[in-house]
Length: 67
Image (tube, rainbow, N blue to C red):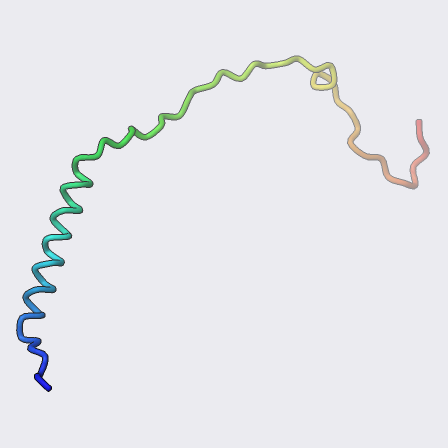
């Protein structure tokens, strides 16, 4: 039974990896990628609520009588 000659495997694998790397680099460099989205400045509309202009009690203690 003949022996398998593996002396050329190293150069074959290395050359294949280099070729694939170059092909992938060429493929990626030819792509056109979209630009990154820019944040949109939004103007917030101020609404006048009647409860904002006067002071209100947030909470009453449970022991105090309601007035």
